[in-house]
Image (cartoon, helix red, strand yellow):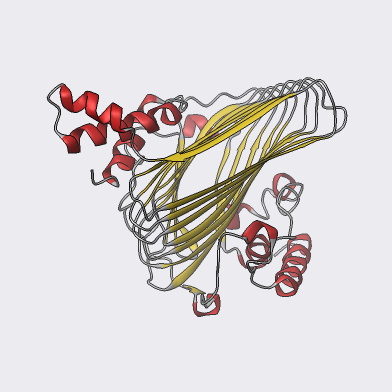
Length: 406
């Protein structure tokens, strides 16, 4: 292991030990209790076994590259020869750590720091993950597909992702977290987009309904670059995901979309930031969720506009459709603006199916259950349509609606 990597692991371990498990007194955890969870019971399995991607929603079709991480290690990786010939680097982060240290060292632990308990733990304990680098000017048409699975029950998976796009580069990355076995997943993804780069990033969290899933995703977007980020969450018992975008260059754009379905007694916590550090940048966030039974969702979103970031155009919305009177959705939007000449707006709603809309459909001969299902699908459609790839959009729509029993 390289000296620089050992140093960062040590710093992360010290931070993780000092921080401890968050409690309800911590601002970002006020609505998500971890009381009673024994994280020490989960250990990374030493054996990573090969196998197919059982439960993969977006695994079909052609891809520029594929990677599967099972338990503690990558068990399958492939990259099309013509893509590799263009200088694209794609594969196991652990395997490539020494060979491509020049790509990894400036990013790992610098985009997502060690000031949060789970990110610090991951910095100390990650065992494998993904490195994707697309050189300047290279435009990869086919998507890259990655899958992460806990194959050994009651084990932990510490995964790490680094994505680097050079100036004018274009790529699509699909990241799936498969059902697998019950366990504890904790990961970090660090994304860096150079000037005029374009990344489509699709994350699907479909972990086992008895699993714990924690993740910190953070992107830095340079001048005139664009990130189209879509997330779908339909799994895990308890989960918290951070989705953070930092617009560092003038004219940069971040479009964030998410759909989620939470049922039973499952708990989902989404924490987002849209950080405008440069003038004339655009961020647009649209999250839509469906809640059933006694499930609970939390969304906390902050738009931050730094001094001098004039011309900022930022929007965020969180809409929740409540299919049960015992479900609960908490939405906490926020604005922190340190300059003028900006446009920043937000909105949040939570409510049941519109009875007049249901009546209209039923009056046209549509059975009640089918009418309610049509309303749910129509409610989610706006967020799903923001995914540019039709194949991905249709597959996700089918997967999401499978979790809705009406």
